[in-house]
Image (cartoon, rainbow, N blue to C red; front, side):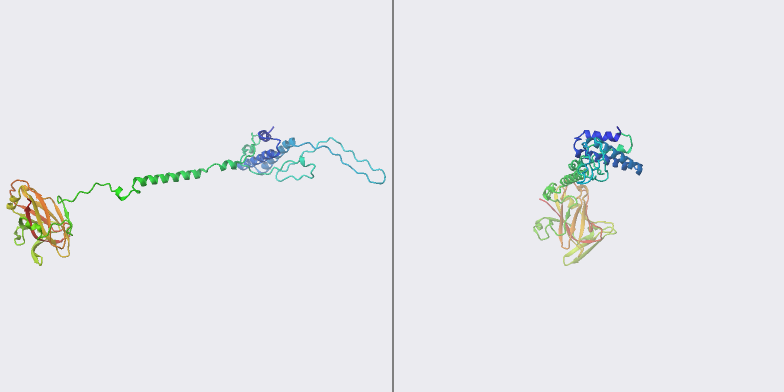
Amino acid sequence: MDAIEKAIRNALEKGNAEDRAFRERVYRSAFAALDRALQANPGVTVEAAIKRRKAIQAKITEIESEYLPAVPDVAPQIDAPAAGPAAGVAPAVETGQKAPSPAVTVDGPVHPASDAARSRVLPVVPDIMPDAIDIAASAAPGAATEVAPDRDERRIRGRRLPLTAIFFTVTLLAAIGIGLFFAMQTGVFKTAAQLNTAPPEAPPTVEGDDFTPADGANAPAKPGAPDQSRDWIDVFSPNDPTHVAAPSDAKAEVMKDDTGSFLRIQSGASGSAIAFDVGQGVLERLAGKHAVFDIIARAEDGKDTQISVDCNFGELGDCGRKRYAVGQQRNEYLFDVQFPNKHPGSAGTIAVNSDFDKQGKAVNIYEIRVSIEP
């Protein structure tokens, strides 16, 4: 038994071989498997392919003949004429002869000549390509070949979700999850109040490098206010500018307008400050006391500026750097100092830089004074 016949018979044994429809599926599978094997082997010539198809056709014809019922012998009947001489004897017909082998059509249906012989015609074996059979070995004559019954793989594949769809779905879900995680971490869904986790801001103080805005909010009272009741000690007055020292690239000039007399100071390009003397006698009165200094000033017309103030009180220390925004209106700029209880030993100074941004702006100084807090 060759490999083709063995493969077909093995497939028939796996089902109901008496069922003609089942046998047809096996035969179709055999031809389809041969076609796949020939396509997978481009080295096979056309003549060899035709030869192998005819070999399978012959095997199918041989196997199918085993399942066809026998056809009884039929003798032809010859009717004699109604009148005339004796009829001739009909030629003898030998009975018991076997019917010739049935013909098999591979590439098209078989049309029997009459209804009587139809039971001996082989089933149509169309040349189709079912997906469930694989006889790759048919391309090599003599190799073992297996023909499996025809199966409907479409129902099996229909239940499978394509790998591309699974991969796309998993990737999309992962991206959404990562996006939600980062959104929660960065506070996208939080309110402004929840995002503001900083501690409450402390109220501004006058210590260190303080800044007073030009609009006068938090500004000290102007002259004529209740602060006039203080016992002020004069530190500087435009009437006596001899206690003012200006570096070579700075300017200090006494001037007067409708606002009164003042000393217009202008720091140099180096940012040098103009120094106002604080007499030793004044410092002796301030030793061990809490004192408040008051600088009365305004900016040059149309040129708002920022001034900085530094102090050097000798043995009594300093006042730290102060910074104020000075506008067009005459105003008071205060700072306080807690002096140690010791002898000053010498006079001190209050240095004023007229333009903290070094743009050459000037400021008018009307007065510098100090009072002792009770």
